[in-house]
Length: 410
Image: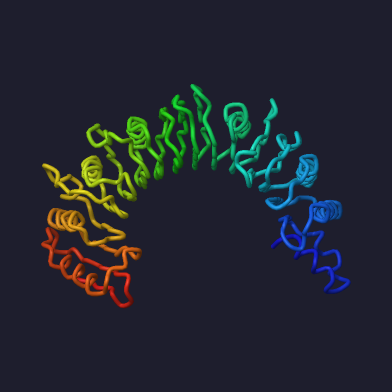
């Protein structure tokens, strides 16, 4: 709970008067009853002054309403470090980090966010030593090589990293060489026309996520332990996406959401890497998920067992020259979300049912934003149930947007 509520308990009885000073979690948020900065600042100063703990578990500071002098924020963080803080979560407009933070031996989790990302300016000292930090979630604006990446090198046991960069610098190479890392999330808001390089040497990484504008060339040196990957990008250069997919081709689970294609849409004619270990694939639509791309990706996933397609782009479904291997031997379940009953969708579902010999379950969900009439949904359900099936054990489950419109066929 917010620390203001904990302090209010002091009025309940004399025995409770100072109980709040023993609370292990301090959560300061600039909301009611603080109508001005002075009252909020005095409250934080008083709480930290009376805190009697030998170790503070969580110190959270969220300032979106007030402008607080950087010296005050630095003083509060320094006090939390002296209280042997374990988790530190900072969200504000701008700040100055005290030097004591970068040598805190008790810190295990650190989050640094900004209410206005373009004010996220902070400097990393030359020497960093955080021996117990395992989780890091930070935003860097324009100097990731001199701040964020420099900071990361001071963590010998880091296993969870989330990094948001507003803008990669020109012609720089960013190397993530972290042998202990298990989860990595990268989010990029923008860049220049010059493509930077991101080198991944993370042999124990199990989960990898890329989000935002894809402007960087990803070079993989070691991703041997990768299990799951998520790619949700605005793509402007198709060759960058091809290289990224090549780097994560050892994943067993992949979620792919492309919000924009380059005008030429050359990826459909470029050879993609083979996903020889992929068991689960989720393809999310918008403007980039074309039927031709779906067919191309299926041909690269020979061991695929579960397929989920979410709202593909309208167009023409042209069946591939040969049936993908996964459909003949391994594909067991499939989900088709936000169906609208278009001709291309019906042709695709007919192709899937008619060629997937190992298919056990097909789930179809109507697009709730399309507002199909009840009769239209019933017609769509009936047509799908009448499609020929290559697998005798296949069940079809249809979920419409109207109440009691769920149907099932064994």
